[in-house]
Image (cartoon, rainbow, N blue to C red; front, side, top):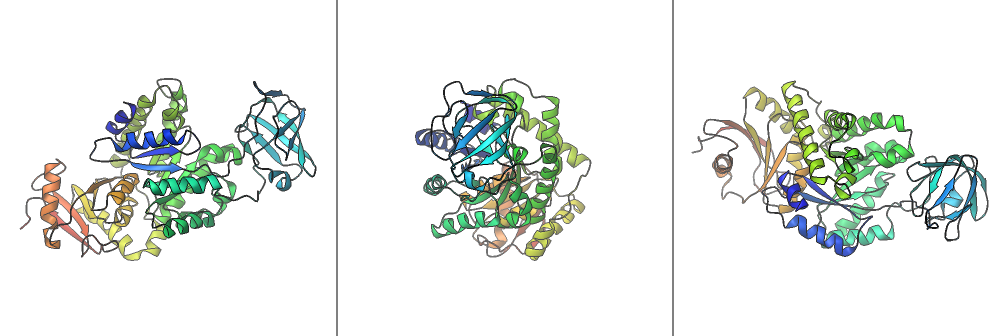
Length: 457
């Protein structure tokens, strides 16, 4: 019932977190999402675990530590108790340096490394609390020599391929090479899955231009980013990453604690509402809920609230003619299509067009149009069901799966039929059509047509 309500509220992407749940639960979730009867099926994004550092198991109830206390993290696995713990990544014993910070449970407990031994490190507590088993570890200043894609991740990638997921989110990306290694594997399997690079490490911020070029989309993961880096820098980093994704012409998602209070309460705080609105004003293509819908007490209300905030913010953007500059790197790398997309925006504005219709077989032209931030809908047509689902992530794009008209010249007539039947346009409305011959060929878009609904010969 909850999944059905999500569909009615128009979610664009359903995220499947591979860090939690059994294989049976994963399959059930996939079945429920795909069973929804909707004109606009959401894309499904698998979220890989990545090399998440965690403490080993700890005695029931955890271990309370106070400032000034010392404890050891050793290489050998054991049940953690007062003074000694283990972790799931023994290599950190080798890579961490004296004086570096060690954070437990997203920084709830903070310590400093004061001694290194062959098989253990000694830490001094700076901020106390309760240390519980299997909680996350962060070492903000440490460069760990561990693979970005784990054995579990590769198994989950195989599952994603077998189940034809639309997006894969890569956790703890450190460089563009991490994205390229997964891309190479997907290509070897002929798998049509788009890659989302999660920005949550300092190294990723440093390599953001190369990462945005390598990935299909970007996700600003503010949770780990706020632990790995100075918390007060996160709002500025968010703007930096969103801008980098825009310049590269890639969709960008802003995530983590968007409406965190709605995990327990039926309404968000004023600060949370402002946070969501400002992410959209920054230029985010999508905002994402996690705990609010995964374990929260008010999942439907949270999605409803997110939609209301987005609707009001987008109305404000349109009414006040807030514009973003054309995507700079996209223009340099795909000059023709980028020029057509930018030209379409100017023509649509000057001709007072009702909407833009683009034939976008693989989704590229729709993405270019999306990045120019039209104030009218962009309807993207394709025969490819997977491309249609992927385009659900693109800002301002309404993707539709349809057949190819027999002749290119029949496209305006098809547009008339589709737009009028759906109530999106009326006879006499001007629409802009972007396409190229032959239809159904990726990368063929090379022309624009100003068309009046009802005037097809």
